[in-house]
Image (cartoon, rainbow, N blue to C red):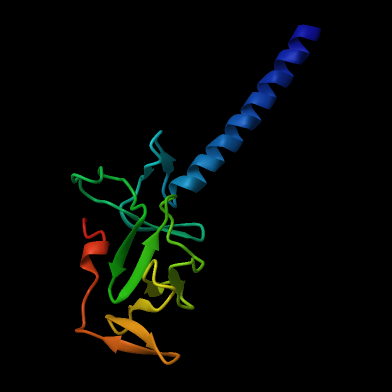
Length: 155
């Protein structure tokens, strides 16, 4: 009789654990399954612009020399319309300003500061121009440009 009661308890515990895991998998599947490999590359089951919780990712639709299909952008900028995003080493779009990247209120890149010049130079995303600080004010310099060489353009 003791063996039967313990078998029933084990079966109930296992069924509850499996139900819990199934709920977790179903909830995650509706927002994209996220995994990573030993090199830190992040893979998500959906492609394109993906929102998982409060995190934004861009996941490549096709394979390229730099990215596998289903791999998320890492350590790069990416345009979405006229908005610029930066994806960190964890593949998430950053949500807070860094030493070299100043974010706007909508968490898109507003300025990119030039490393090594004491914050005297920056790229203004809205103006699509480099700027230098003169007499305490920022002034546009040069021609309008897109920072295409710093961005990931791969679908």
